[in-house]
Image 1 (cartoon, rainbow, N blue to C red):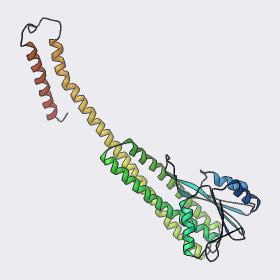
Image 2 (cartoon, rainbow, N blue to C red):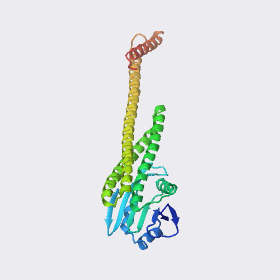
Image 3 (cartoon, rainbow, N blue to C red):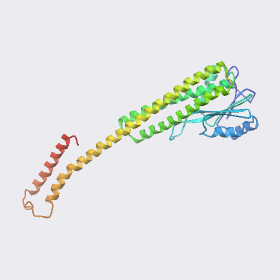
Image 4 (cartoon, one colour):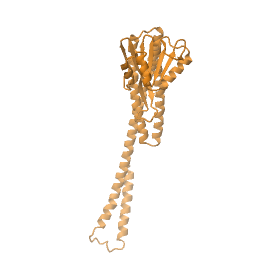
Length: 308
């Protein structure tokens, strides 16, 4: 989907492309790709690079075209092994052409447009828009981290009531999401440090870069904290599971040992040998009483030694 935005004095849509407008491309169709290549003459390899979901955050310049790939947070709507992940957002610039291209529809871009419309100032230039996108991505990383934190707390509450495999698997998937987050945030930070020297930065852009650095540092530190908490939680519940299993094995072993003694008594008196009790009418009750007394004695002994 193609959307053309006039960014001077505010943010409003226009019917067709005009110089210095912002071209927002979301989930591009083949017609959208053809427009970018044929009308705006965007290099095809830039478009294919952005389509690669594993593309790292980077900066590239070729024949006057500037490509900036920013990793942004993304929530998968369908049930997935990693509910939170990151995807590439491409920013393509040359002269009076400014394009953002993303192969997924994200809440971040919807919120970015809404906020800029409420702000009512637009962008001073394409560089200003680039750094505002960096700031928006850092803010949305923090929002997604709060959601992950809430999921971790809910899983911990469920595990406190009952240690269930489903909750442990959910924690493991959140750990994968945090790994994607911290890797992408570090890549964005490295990209930002390079762009300060690659793009024409004025005084206002320098202030924006400082704000972006603060937000990204906070997002990175928060991700590391949650990752450490989650790792510690997983280890704790793994130890709890092992401890519970040891208790069960200990109890079953104790029961087996206690039952071994009456089994031994019944085996001795059940042999096909003459022992003097086979014709005595009290022989069976006495053997039964020995079994009961032996069982009770060893049960008491194991209980006293905390073996049971």
